[in-house]
Length: 152
Image (tube, rainbow, N blue to C red; front, side):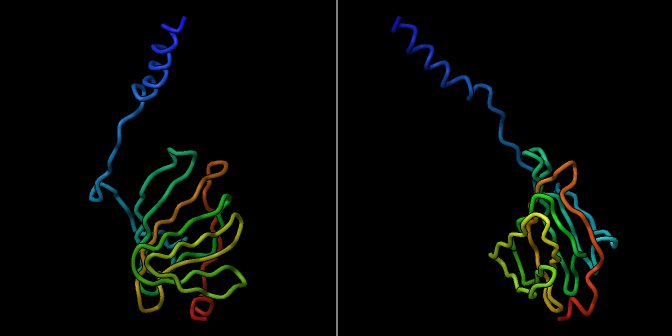
């Protein structure tokens, strides 16, 4: 009987590796992006998908805001991580103080917290935006951030 345990255990340990998928790479030049919609952004914003919802409905995009550009007010049903990769920008929760975010900073916006984010008036900012979808939606957009709100 012990003669069968070792081969069975070895097969059990090797089988998942035999069924594993291979690594995939998407080259930067193959990640097609687009200018952000005027409905959801003010100013020049470039959005490029990083990965889609293949992993438990989680997706990510690389977002580049030129000086003065920003998102509209919005919420996320599950929440959102912003990983700032370049430049300096601003982020603000509705009713809160505007905060400066810089390369290396990570911002967490909990589910349902209304906020906006974007570049400062003089610098660009790039961040990865990571969020999960609930019932097929990862964001609910609101009204534009006014120039007065942005300038505070």
